[in-house]
View 1: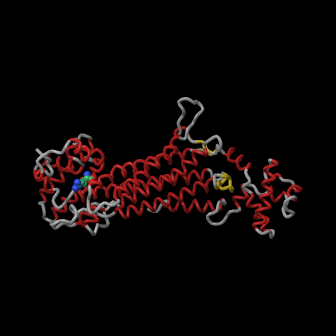
View 2 (view 1 turned 90 degrees about the vertical axis):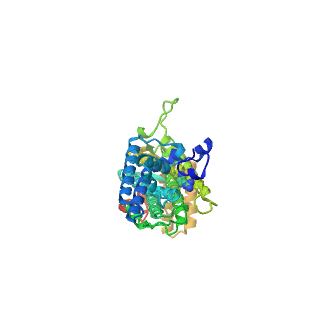
View 3 (view 1 turned 45 degrees about the vertical axis):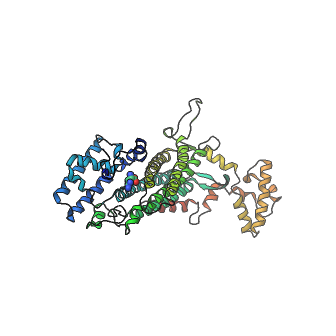
Length: 460
Ligand code: ARG
Protein backbone atom coordinates (compact mmCIF):
# COMPACT_ATOMS: atom_id res chain seq x y z
CA UNK A 1 0.00 0.00 0.00
CA UNK A 2 1.38 3.42 -0.88
CA UNK A 3 0.98 6.99 0.34
CA UNK A 4 -2.60 8.03 1.04
CA UNK A 5 -2.22 11.51 -0.48
CA UNK A 6 -0.62 10.66 -3.79
CA UNK A 7 -0.85 6.89 -3.81
CA UNK A 8 -2.24 6.77 -7.33
CA UNK A 9 1.02 7.35 -9.10
CA UNK A 10 3.10 5.12 -6.83
CA UNK A 11 3.50 1.44 -6.20
CA UNK A 12 5.89 1.58 -3.23
CA UNK A 13 6.30 3.26 0.13
CA UNK A 14 9.27 5.61 0.43
CA UNK A 15 12.47 4.30 1.94
CA UNK A 16 12.54 4.80 5.72
CA UNK A 17 15.41 7.27 5.63
CA UNK A 18 13.72 9.16 2.82
CA UNK A 19 10.58 9.53 4.88
CA UNK A 20 12.49 10.84 7.90
CA UNK A 21 14.64 13.18 5.82
CA UNK A 22 11.72 14.65 3.91
CA UNK A 23 9.33 15.03 6.82
CA UNK A 24 8.82 18.45 8.33
CA UNK A 25 6.18 17.47 10.87
CA UNK A 26 8.65 17.66 13.79
CA UNK A 27 8.84 21.43 13.34
CA UNK A 28 5.98 22.56 11.12
CA UNK A 29 3.29 21.34 13.53
CA UNK A 30 3.90 24.75 15.00
CA UNK A 31 1.90 26.08 12.04
CA UNK A 32 -1.17 23.96 12.82
CA UNK A 33 -3.50 26.76 13.94
CA UNK A 34 -2.60 28.93 10.97
CA UNK A 35 -3.15 25.95 8.71
CA UNK A 36 -6.59 25.34 10.16
CA UNK A 37 -7.54 29.03 9.97
CA UNK A 38 -6.42 29.06 6.32
CA UNK A 39 -8.36 25.88 5.53
CA UNK A 40 -11.54 27.25 7.11
CA UNK A 41 -11.32 30.46 5.09
CA UNK A 42 -10.65 28.44 1.95
CA UNK A 43 -13.60 26.06 2.37
CA UNK A 44 -15.99 28.89 3.25
CA UNK A 45 -14.93 30.62 0.08
CA UNK A 46 -15.46 27.43 -1.95
CA UNK A 47 -18.98 27.20 -0.52
CA UNK A 48 -19.71 30.84 -1.27
CA UNK A 49 -18.53 30.23 -4.85
CA UNK A 50 -20.70 27.08 -4.99
CA UNK A 51 -17.72 24.83 -5.65
CA UNK A 52 -18.82 22.80 -2.61
CA UNK A 53 -22.17 22.86 -0.84
CA UNK A 54 -22.78 24.84 2.37
CA UNK A 55 -23.37 21.54 4.13
CA UNK A 56 -20.06 20.09 2.99
CA UNK A 57 -18.26 23.22 4.07
CA UNK A 58 -19.99 23.08 7.43
CA UNK A 59 -18.86 19.49 7.99
CA UNK A 60 -15.30 20.40 7.09
CA UNK A 61 -15.28 23.47 9.34
CA UNK A 62 -16.58 21.40 12.26
CA UNK A 63 -14.03 18.66 11.58
CA UNK A 64 -11.23 21.22 11.52
CA UNK A 65 -12.49 22.75 14.76
CA UNK A 66 -12.46 19.41 16.50
CA UNK A 67 -8.93 18.76 15.25
CA UNK A 68 -7.96 22.13 16.62
CA UNK A 69 -9.36 21.23 20.01
CA UNK A 70 -7.40 17.98 20.04
CA UNK A 71 -4.20 19.78 19.15
CA UNK A 72 -4.84 22.26 21.96
CA UNK A 73 -5.51 19.41 24.36
CA UNK A 74 -2.31 17.72 23.27
CA UNK A 75 -4.08 14.52 22.24
CA UNK A 76 -3.62 14.85 18.48
CA UNK A 77 -1.15 12.28 17.19
CA UNK A 78 1.29 13.61 14.60
CA UNK A 79 2.64 11.03 12.22
CA UNK A 80 5.93 11.28 10.40
CA UNK A 81 4.62 9.09 7.62
CA UNK A 82 2.18 11.90 6.85
CA UNK A 83 5.17 14.16 6.27
CA UNK A 84 3.96 17.58 7.28
CA UNK A 85 1.35 19.57 9.16
CA UNK A 86 -0.86 19.99 6.10
CA UNK A 87 -1.16 16.29 5.36
CA UNK A 88 -1.49 15.28 8.99
CA UNK A 89 -4.47 17.56 9.43
CA UNK A 90 -6.09 16.68 6.12
CA UNK A 91 -5.62 12.96 6.70
CA UNK A 92 -7.25 13.16 10.13
CA UNK A 93 -10.05 15.27 8.74
CA UNK A 94 -10.89 12.61 6.16
CA UNK A 95 -10.61 9.90 8.80
CA UNK A 96 -13.01 11.82 10.99
CA UNK A 97 -15.69 13.13 8.61
CA UNK A 98 -15.23 10.75 5.69
CA UNK A 99 -14.58 11.28 2.00
CA UNK A 100 -16.16 14.74 2.01
CA UNK A 101 -13.03 15.91 3.86
CA UNK A 102 -11.19 15.29 0.62
CA UNK A 103 -13.01 18.29 -0.90
CA UNK A 104 -11.04 20.71 1.27
CA UNK A 105 -8.02 20.62 -1.00
CA UNK A 106 -10.02 21.65 -4.09
CA UNK A 107 -8.22 24.42 -5.98
CA UNK A 108 -5.37 24.42 -3.50
CA UNK A 109 -1.86 23.00 -3.30
CA UNK A 110 0.45 22.56 -0.36
CA UNK A 111 2.62 25.13 -2.10
CA UNK A 112 0.20 28.00 -1.61
CA UNK A 113 -1.02 26.45 1.65
CA UNK A 114 2.42 26.45 3.29
CA UNK A 115 3.06 29.93 1.96
CA UNK A 116 -0.15 31.10 3.60
CA UNK A 117 0.73 29.48 6.93
CA UNK A 118 4.16 31.08 7.00
CA UNK A 119 2.71 34.50 6.19
CA UNK A 120 0.23 34.17 9.04
CA UNK A 121 3.03 33.08 11.36
CA UNK A 122 5.23 36.02 10.33
CA UNK A 123 2.41 38.54 10.75
CA UNK A 124 1.50 37.33 14.21
CA UNK A 125 5.09 37.13 15.43
CA UNK A 126 6.01 40.54 14.06
CA UNK A 127 3.34 42.05 16.29
CA UNK A 128 4.66 40.18 19.33
CA UNK A 129 8.18 41.32 18.50
CA UNK A 130 7.06 44.95 18.17
CA UNK A 131 5.49 44.75 21.62
CA UNK A 132 8.65 43.24 23.13
CA UNK A 133 10.93 45.80 21.49
CA UNK A 134 8.66 48.51 22.86
CA UNK A 135 8.87 47.03 26.37
CA UNK A 136 12.65 47.07 26.23
CA UNK A 137 12.59 50.66 25.01
CA UNK A 138 10.31 51.56 27.90
CA UNK A 139 12.64 49.86 30.37
CA UNK A 140 15.59 51.81 28.92
CA UNK A 141 13.66 55.09 29.14
CA UNK A 142 12.67 54.33 32.74
CA UNK A 143 16.23 53.45 33.67
CA UNK A 144 17.41 56.69 32.03
CA UNK A 145 14.85 58.61 34.03
CA UNK A 146 15.73 56.92 37.34
CA UNK A 147 19.41 57.70 36.87
CA UNK A 148 18.98 61.03 35.18
CA UNK A 149 21.67 62.78 37.25
CA UNK A 150 24.35 60.17 36.62
CA UNK A 151 27.23 61.24 34.43
CA UNK A 152 29.54 58.58 32.99
CA UNK A 153 32.63 58.79 30.85
CA UNK A 154 31.67 58.57 27.20
CA UNK A 155 34.06 56.52 25.07
CA UNK A 156 35.55 56.38 21.62
CA UNK A 157 38.00 53.56 20.88
CA UNK A 158 37.02 52.37 24.38
CA UNK A 159 39.16 55.27 25.66
CA UNK A 160 37.54 57.89 27.84
CA UNK A 161 36.50 60.74 25.58
CA UNK A 162 33.91 63.18 26.94
CA UNK A 163 31.48 62.85 29.83
CA UNK A 164 27.86 62.13 28.98
CA UNK A 165 24.67 61.58 30.86
CA UNK A 166 24.10 57.88 31.51
CA UNK A 167 20.57 58.61 30.29
CA UNK A 168 21.98 59.87 26.99
CA UNK A 169 23.92 56.65 26.55
CA UNK A 170 20.84 54.52 27.22
CA UNK A 171 18.70 56.62 24.92
CA UNK A 172 21.08 55.88 22.06
CA UNK A 173 19.80 52.29 22.29
CA UNK A 174 16.20 53.46 22.45
CA UNK A 175 16.66 55.11 19.03
CA UNK A 176 18.36 52.04 17.57
CA UNK A 177 15.41 49.99 18.72
CA UNK A 178 13.04 52.61 17.28
CA UNK A 179 14.53 51.89 13.86
CA UNK A 180 14.20 48.16 14.52
CA UNK A 181 10.53 48.71 15.19
CA UNK A 182 10.22 50.52 11.88
CA UNK A 183 11.96 47.66 10.15
CA UNK A 184 9.47 45.28 11.75
CA UNK A 185 6.61 47.42 10.45
CA UNK A 186 8.24 47.09 7.03
CA UNK A 187 8.33 43.31 7.36
CA UNK A 188 4.69 43.34 8.37
CA UNK A 189 3.80 45.34 5.30
CA UNK A 190 5.58 42.93 2.96
CA UNK A 191 4.29 39.83 4.74
CA UNK A 192 0.76 41.16 4.36
CA UNK A 193 0.19 39.46 0.99
CA UNK A 194 -2.26 36.58 0.66
CA UNK A 195 -0.88 33.72 -1.47
CA UNK A 196 -3.81 31.28 -1.53
CA UNK A 197 -5.29 30.74 -4.97
CA UNK A 198 -1.89 30.32 -6.54
CA UNK A 199 -2.43 26.56 -6.47
CA UNK A 200 0.74 24.66 -7.18
CA UNK A 201 2.08 27.52 -9.29
CA UNK A 202 -0.29 28.57 -12.06
CA UNK A 203 -3.57 29.38 -10.34
CA UNK A 204 -6.70 27.23 -10.46
CA UNK A 205 -9.53 26.44 -12.83
CA UNK A 206 -12.15 26.86 -10.07
CA UNK A 207 -14.01 30.17 -9.76
CA UNK A 208 -12.32 31.18 -6.52
CA UNK A 209 -12.61 34.51 -4.70
CA UNK A 210 -9.17 35.40 -3.37
CA UNK A 211 -10.24 38.74 -1.96
CA UNK A 212 -12.76 37.00 0.24
CA UNK A 213 -10.10 34.65 1.63
CA UNK A 214 -7.75 37.57 2.19
CA UNK A 215 -10.28 39.55 4.16
CA UNK A 216 -11.39 36.50 6.16
CA UNK A 217 -7.77 36.09 7.27
CA UNK A 218 -7.07 39.76 7.87
CA UNK A 219 -4.79 40.40 4.88
CA UNK A 220 -5.01 43.76 3.16
CA UNK A 221 -3.34 42.69 -0.12
CA UNK A 222 -2.86 39.65 -2.37
CA UNK A 223 -0.09 38.33 -4.56
CA UNK A 224 -0.83 39.36 -8.12
CA UNK A 225 1.28 36.57 -9.62
CA UNK A 226 0.71 32.94 -8.69
CA UNK A 227 4.31 31.98 -9.44
CA UNK A 228 5.60 34.74 -7.18
CA UNK A 229 3.10 33.72 -4.49
CA UNK A 230 4.51 30.21 -4.09
CA UNK A 231 8.16 31.21 -4.62
CA UNK A 232 8.45 34.28 -2.44
CA UNK A 233 10.54 33.92 0.69
CA UNK A 234 11.69 37.56 0.68
CA UNK A 235 9.67 38.38 3.75
CA UNK A 236 11.30 35.47 5.61
CA UNK A 237 14.72 36.78 4.69
CA UNK A 238 13.72 40.33 5.57
CA UNK A 239 12.41 39.19 8.91
CA UNK A 240 15.65 37.30 9.60
CA UNK A 241 17.62 40.36 8.56
CA UNK A 242 15.58 42.56 10.89
CA UNK A 243 16.00 40.08 13.73
CA UNK A 244 19.74 40.02 13.03
CA UNK A 245 19.89 43.80 13.41
CA UNK A 246 17.90 43.60 16.66
CA UNK A 247 20.39 41.01 17.96
CA UNK A 248 23.33 43.13 16.81
CA UNK A 249 21.94 46.01 18.88
CA UNK A 250 21.31 43.80 21.89
CA UNK A 251 24.78 42.35 21.53
CA UNK A 252 26.39 45.79 21.68
CA UNK A 253 24.40 46.61 24.78
CA UNK A 254 25.31 43.18 26.17
CA UNK A 255 28.98 43.92 25.67
CA UNK A 256 28.66 47.20 27.56
CA UNK A 257 26.74 45.57 30.38
CA UNK A 258 29.44 42.91 30.64
CA UNK A 259 32.24 45.50 30.67
CA UNK A 260 30.44 47.82 33.03
CA UNK A 261 29.73 45.10 35.54
CA UNK A 262 33.40 44.03 35.65
CA UNK A 263 35.52 45.08 38.64
CA UNK A 264 37.66 47.12 36.24
CA UNK A 265 34.73 49.38 35.36
CA UNK A 266 32.37 48.71 38.24
CA UNK A 267 29.73 51.09 36.86
CA UNK A 268 26.84 48.63 37.18
CA UNK A 269 25.50 46.03 39.47
CA UNK A 270 23.19 43.51 37.85
CA UNK A 271 20.38 42.06 39.89
CA UNK A 272 21.15 38.57 41.22
CA UNK A 273 18.23 37.21 39.21
CA UNK A 274 20.06 38.02 35.97
CA UNK A 275 23.47 36.65 36.91
CA UNK A 276 24.95 33.31 37.86
CA UNK A 277 27.67 32.12 40.20
CA UNK A 278 30.64 29.90 39.59
CA UNK A 279 30.76 26.27 40.64
CA UNK A 280 34.33 26.74 41.85
CA UNK A 281 34.93 30.41 42.65
CA UNK A 282 32.63 31.55 45.44
CA UNK A 283 33.13 35.26 44.79
CA UNK A 284 31.90 35.18 41.19
CA UNK A 285 28.83 36.87 39.83
CA UNK A 286 28.76 36.39 36.10
CA UNK A 287 26.69 38.34 33.57
CA UNK A 288 25.75 35.08 31.77
CA UNK A 289 22.54 36.38 30.28
CA UNK A 290 24.24 39.30 28.57
CA UNK A 291 26.95 36.92 27.35
CA UNK A 292 24.40 34.48 25.98
CA UNK A 293 22.54 37.16 24.12
CA UNK A 294 25.85 38.26 22.63
CA UNK A 295 26.55 34.63 21.74
CA UNK A 296 23.15 33.86 20.29
CA UNK A 297 23.53 36.78 17.92
CA UNK A 298 25.76 34.50 15.87
CA UNK A 299 23.05 31.92 15.64
CA UNK A 300 20.48 34.40 14.36
CA UNK A 301 22.95 35.71 11.76
CA UNK A 302 23.48 32.07 10.80
CA UNK A 303 19.79 31.63 10.05
CA UNK A 304 19.83 34.73 7.85
CA UNK A 305 22.85 33.51 5.90
CA UNK A 306 21.35 30.03 5.71
CA UNK A 307 18.13 31.28 4.16
CA UNK A 308 19.84 33.65 1.75
CA UNK A 309 21.96 30.75 0.60
CA UNK A 310 19.02 28.35 0.38
CA UNK A 311 17.11 30.72 -1.90
CA UNK A 312 20.04 31.64 -4.07
CA UNK A 313 19.72 30.09 -7.50
CA UNK A 314 16.38 28.38 -6.85
CA UNK A 315 14.41 28.19 -10.07
CA UNK A 316 10.73 29.16 -9.97
CA UNK A 317 8.53 28.02 -8.45
CA UNK A 318 8.28 25.79 -5.37
CA UNK A 319 11.27 23.61 -4.60
CA UNK A 320 11.56 21.34 -1.62
CA UNK A 321 14.59 23.38 -0.55
CA UNK A 322 12.08 25.97 0.63
CA UNK A 323 11.00 23.73 3.47
CA UNK A 324 14.26 24.90 5.04
CA UNK A 325 12.70 28.31 5.71
CA UNK A 326 10.98 27.13 8.86
CA UNK A 327 13.44 25.98 11.50
CA UNK A 328 15.66 29.00 11.07
CA UNK A 329 12.83 31.51 11.26
CA UNK A 330 11.17 29.77 14.20
CA UNK A 331 14.43 29.61 16.10
CA UNK A 332 15.35 33.21 15.29
CA UNK A 333 11.93 34.42 16.46
CA UNK A 334 12.15 32.42 19.70
CA UNK A 335 15.71 33.52 20.37
CA UNK A 336 14.98 37.20 19.83
CA UNK A 337 11.78 37.13 21.86
CA UNK A 338 13.58 35.57 24.82
CA UNK A 339 16.55 37.92 24.47
CA UNK A 340 14.23 40.94 24.48
CA UNK A 341 12.36 39.68 27.55
CA UNK A 342 15.56 38.99 29.46
CA UNK A 343 17.07 42.34 28.57
CA UNK A 344 13.93 44.15 29.67
CA UNK A 345 14.11 42.54 33.11
CA UNK A 346 17.85 43.06 33.35
CA UNK A 347 17.57 46.79 32.57
CA UNK A 348 14.61 47.21 34.92
CA UNK A 349 16.60 45.79 37.84
CA UNK A 350 20.15 47.02 37.36
CA UNK A 351 21.66 49.61 39.66
CA UNK A 352 24.30 52.18 38.83
CA UNK A 353 27.30 52.31 41.16
CA UNK A 354 27.70 56.05 41.37
CA UNK A 355 30.95 56.05 43.40
CA UNK A 356 32.72 54.02 40.72
CA UNK A 357 31.38 56.23 37.96
CA UNK A 358 32.42 59.39 39.80
CA UNK A 359 35.91 58.14 40.50
CA UNK A 360 36.34 57.19 36.84
CA UNK A 361 35.34 60.71 35.88
CA UNK A 362 37.85 62.22 38.30
CA UNK A 363 40.71 60.33 36.70
CA UNK A 364 40.14 61.19 33.10
CA UNK A 365 41.04 64.13 30.92
CA UNK A 366 37.65 64.47 29.39
CA UNK A 367 37.71 68.25 29.90
CA UNK A 368 40.54 68.56 27.36
CA UNK A 369 38.33 69.43 24.40
CA UNK A 370 36.64 72.12 26.45
CA UNK A 371 39.98 73.59 27.55
CA UNK A 372 40.94 73.82 23.89
CA UNK A 373 37.56 75.41 23.14
CA UNK A 374 38.27 78.03 25.85
CA UNK A 375 41.48 78.99 24.07
CA UNK A 376 39.65 79.08 20.73
CA UNK A 377 37.13 81.52 22.21
CA UNK A 378 40.12 83.69 23.14
CA UNK A 379 41.29 83.78 19.55
CA UNK A 380 43.71 80.83 19.40
CA UNK A 381 43.31 78.75 16.21
CA UNK A 382 41.90 75.34 17.12
CA UNK A 383 44.93 73.40 15.89
CA UNK A 384 47.24 75.46 18.12
CA UNK A 385 44.86 75.10 21.06
CA UNK A 386 44.82 71.34 20.50
CA UNK A 387 48.63 71.27 20.68
CA UNK A 388 48.77 73.42 23.84
CA UNK A 389 46.22 71.29 25.68
CA UNK A 390 47.93 68.12 24.48
CA UNK A 391 51.11 69.32 26.17
CA UNK A 392 49.19 70.17 29.34
CA UNK A 393 47.69 66.68 29.45
CA UNK A 394 51.08 65.07 28.97
CA UNK A 395 52.42 67.16 31.85
CA UNK A 396 49.46 66.10 34.03
CA UNK A 397 50.09 62.44 33.26
CA UNK A 398 53.79 62.82 34.14
CA UNK A 399 53.00 64.65 37.38
CA UNK A 400 49.97 62.48 38.14
CA UNK A 401 47.44 65.23 38.61
CA UNK A 402 44.14 66.08 36.99
CA UNK A 403 43.82 69.22 34.84
CA UNK A 404 41.71 70.89 37.51
CA UNK A 405 44.61 70.76 39.98
CA UNK A 406 47.14 72.69 37.87
CA UNK A 407 48.39 75.86 39.54
CA UNK A 408 48.48 79.24 37.86
CA UNK A 409 52.27 78.90 37.49
CA UNK A 410 52.01 75.52 35.89
CA UNK A 411 49.39 76.71 33.44
CA UNK A 412 51.58 79.69 32.49
CA UNK A 413 54.19 77.25 31.12
CA UNK A 414 51.73 76.33 28.38
CA UNK A 415 49.63 79.45 27.83
CA UNK A 416 49.14 82.89 29.33
CA UNK A 417 45.48 82.84 28.31
CA UNK A 418 44.05 80.53 30.97
CA UNK A 419 43.75 80.72 34.72
CA UNK A 420 43.22 77.94 37.20
CA UNK A 421 39.65 78.96 38.00
CA UNK A 422 38.63 78.33 34.42
CA UNK A 423 39.98 74.81 34.64
CA UNK A 424 38.37 74.12 37.99
CA UNK A 425 35.05 75.21 36.54
CA UNK A 426 35.19 72.45 33.92
CA UNK A 427 33.47 69.85 36.07
CA UNK A 428 31.75 66.88 34.40
CA UNK A 429 28.43 68.60 35.19
CA UNK A 430 29.55 71.78 33.44
CA UNK A 431 30.94 69.87 30.46
CA UNK A 432 27.72 67.97 30.02
CA UNK A 433 25.48 71.00 30.53
CA UNK A 434 27.42 72.95 27.92
CA UNK A 435 26.41 70.49 25.16
CA UNK A 436 22.91 71.75 24.85
CA UNK A 437 22.48 71.48 21.11
CA UNK A 438 19.64 69.34 19.83
CA UNK A 439 20.73 65.72 20.24
CA UNK A 440 23.48 66.73 22.67
CA UNK A 441 24.06 65.37 26.14
CA UNK A 442 23.02 68.40 28.24
CA UNK A 443 20.26 67.53 30.72
CA UNK A 444 17.88 69.96 29.06
CA UNK A 445 18.44 68.41 25.62
CA UNK A 446 18.21 64.88 27.02
CA UNK A 447 14.92 65.68 28.75
CA UNK A 448 13.44 66.64 25.39
CA UNK A 449 15.00 63.60 23.77
CA UNK A 450 13.47 61.34 26.38
CA UNK A 451 10.08 62.85 25.79
CA UNK A 452 10.32 62.45 22.00
CA UNK A 453 11.56 58.89 22.39
CA UNK A 454 8.62 58.05 24.60
CA UNK A 455 6.18 59.64 22.16
CA UNK A 456 7.56 57.43 19.39
CA UNK A 457 6.69 54.34 21.44
CA UNK A 458 3.02 55.05 20.92
CA UNK A 459 3.29 54.67 17.13
CA UNK A 460 1.97 51.41 15.79
N1 ARG B 1 6.34 20.73 4.01
C1 ARG B 1 6.43 21.50 2.82
C2 ARG B 1 7.23 22.76 3.07
O1 ARG B 1 7.35 23.10 4.18
C3 ARG B 1 5.06 21.87 2.35
C4 ARG B 1 4.97 22.12 0.89
C5 ARG B 1 5.28 20.88 0.18
N2 ARG B 1 4.96 20.96 -1.22
C6 ARG B 1 5.40 20.05 -2.04
N3 ARG B 1 5.05 20.17 -3.27
N4 ARG B 1 6.17 19.07 -1.68
O2 ARG B 1 7.73 23.40 2.17
